[in-house]
Length: 234
Image 1 (cartoon, one colour):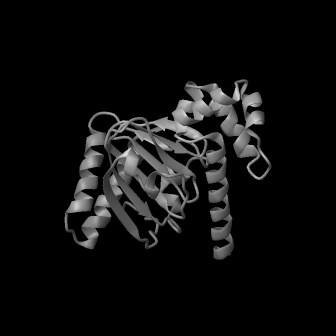
Image 2 (cartoon, rainbow, N blue to C red; image 1 turned 120 degrees about the vertical axis):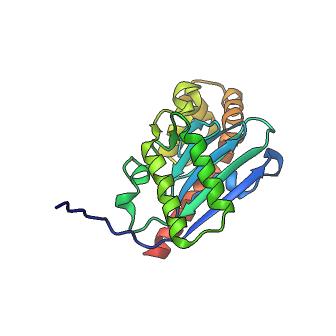
Image 3 (tube, rainbow, N blue to C red; image 1 turned 90 degrees about the vertical axis):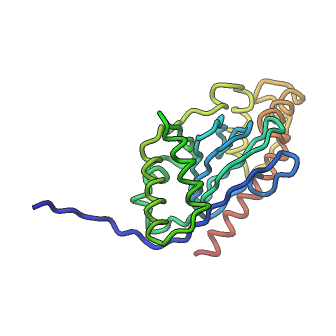
């Protein structure tokens, strides 16, 4: 006799978006933001990186960024090349135990998943099928769990561009993260980073497409959104 125990899957809503956008006409999807759902971002093309919390991950075709609720994230454009991607949003409440790529990792860590062999193209193919093909509910569920199995088997990448590229922006991001509710002056960030104010501003524009003060403003806005959502759900 073979005994098998299945973990219960709580019902949840899911949406999938396919988009091709350019840096000059991007919308909310790539602005720094948080939300109350899990997200699977699948890159098809584009000269971009992806920032989650204070880590910046270089992205190529077939790479995946996963975020769970309230992880601060956004796209960073490096050129005007078209950016093509799929984005899947779904609620995870009650399913944390079976969504291992999302919840078996520290908050803001290992958000990038890469693949060996042809699994990256397989994932893009599954996204295309999910988006374009009319399917019965059971087919949709099976396809979603096929995608989750690919994510389970992928390479969870914990290093980021900030750790191996320019240490001055990394130090500034750490300072901002630890003192987000305090007054922060750009001269202080430059001193901590051991660079001039002009150099720090140039590095932020190169890496994040925004100034240090714009970054702080957006982080604080998302922090207020997070607090409001937590109070509303309490």
